[in-house]
Image (cartoon, rainbow, N blue to C red; front, side, top):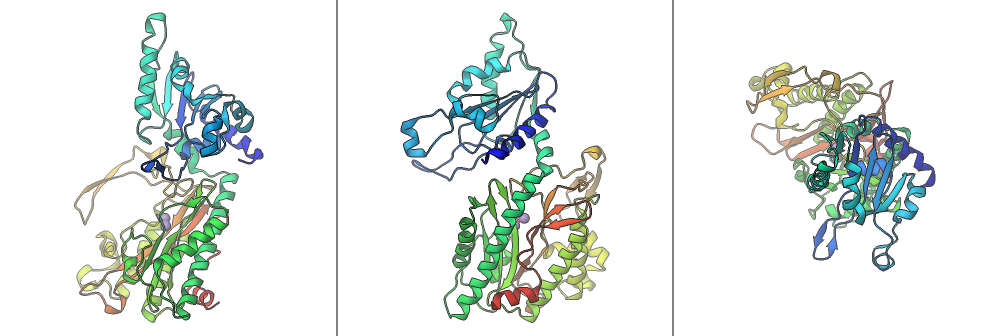
Length: 464
Ligand code: GLY
Ligand code: MN
Ligand code: MN
């Protein structure tokens, strides 16, 4: 962590502490290491809540904060033998100066120190249901406090979910976070350009192109710019594979004449990017591909226009659906004689045969980031409706009002499987266009647009 980042984390800890309530305490662990097989672990990724409050990436660490703002870190002790194998550890002696916490101890002292720290507190906060074992760990400490009641110890009366205040804090990205997210998006955009150009060049050279070749280009570009990981499993789907929403980059051939749907984003210093582009494998759209592509793009433009401070989170989705549904009727994907008017298509969700996901999600430290999608002041205002497709009763609450500093994706798509009644020229075409947007007071700032979306611009790029 660069030295000048320290005040950011201290400020976040202070804001968090101020929401805990009088005489409360909060406990936030980082993520556990996870075994892949035998003595081989998955690459370690810290817990996002913990990192948000500390900027500290080592495993086996816990942060404890009290309502008066005092912070204590429990971390791995220095251990010359282990450090030969696993690398250098910060250690509790250096931690206060390096991270700005008030005190630090070895994590080996957690079970002896925590019961005392919990004693005589009104409430204990910890993140509920985020990692296995936190609850039982806290229970074991509370149990020790309870064993001392005869000596006058008071046990916290309340247990509260630390995710509630932290989710709300994380939903609004500060300048430091926005800067990192811009850099992550910029790297991912370059990676998409690289893969697009590679696809066209390899096909022009008569090579056997596979989805994994394009994934390799993306991963190379991520890593060479310092990204630690992909933010999620990359989707590189050629031809009909693009209609499988959770397809992963595999070994299928990438043929000239087909589209490639690529959904890939890097994580940089704990922050995700999430970009999808759909491009013709050899750099030239067919007429039918271009027609559907331009429809999805028009729906994205409508969603982008609807993304601004004061709008609801669902507004971009509703704008997308309107454009896509009209296009489905115009192009004969949906037969008006069977499904009725545009309003009927929307009302009955008939469009979901070709567009079955939402138009976006919060983006931040996690690709599907935390944050309530319901407007906090309107949680009690419910109305019920019957889903026209499943018949399920859905309880609606007012959608979140967008505010400056929130970051979300805008990702409409269309997925046309081969099916009777669907014009054959559109069979097996899957298209998604996904960009990352920071909500501003004027509208939104698209931070992933270094890679073009316009069909002509994509073709020009792939000629290069
Ligand atoms: N890449 C995951 C998503 O687009 O939501
Ligand atoms: Mn996404
Ligand atoms: Mn995506």
